[in-house]
Amino acid sequence: SQQGEEDPQALSIQEGENATMNCSYKTSINNLQWYRQNSGRGLVHLILIRSNEREKHSGRLRVTLDTSKKSSSLLITASRAADTASYFCARGGSGGYQKVTFGIGTKLQVIP
Amino acid sequence: GAVVSQHPSWVICKSGTSVKIECRSLDFQATTMFWYRQFPKQSLMLMATSNEGSKATYEQGVEKDKFLINHASLTLSTLTVTSAHPEDSSFYICSARGPGQGREKLFFGSGTQLSVL
Image 1 (cartoon, rainbow over the protein chains, first blue to last red):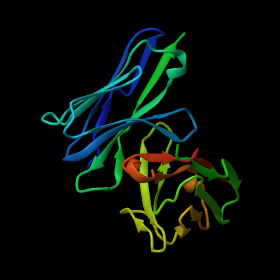
Image 2: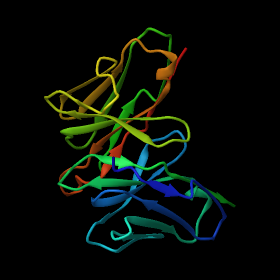
Image 3: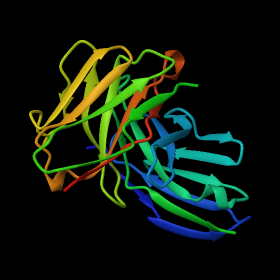
Image 4: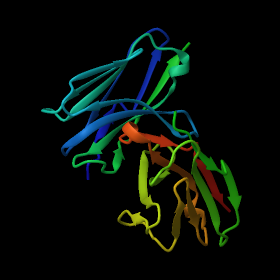
């Protein structure tokens, strides 16, 4: 199984603060993706980082990948109340378009 | 962007009945779709991979006779929960790989909350 873990499982911060979520995995990957899920809804793709990349930015999102440690982090800067959601990292397996497996997620609460 | 529509959003049914959930790719063709199940406060558990024109590939521990998957066209996959029981109550989500260069990304439906009485 390629399942890893996110930590923390829950995070509560004040609006304007930065939020950092971490993800670890166990086997080799082709890419790592981060998704967001609002309560009771489907997931929305946020950002994809390939195994040969170390850092990627998209708006207020910054993702890093350390393949030697098999870990990734998602940083949300200047958080907003609307960022309140669960965030999942997803491992895209090696060898082309393999299935994507998800971790348990981090539930982020941004307090206005 | 790629849009995936899932219907219904929620369904309540009696034990023993069958429930069909539809997953449609609205503006692209999806040769592969995925069905997930999610329990409260837990991650998504991949149930099966649905391939257009062929049999679905089920994950270990998922009963294929219980969860029937049909992917008859490039834009529609259906999941039928047969003879549903209360333990089948869960949130079911479908996804499809994006078109073209976006194939590594997954686009999700909005999910179906199934409650079996």
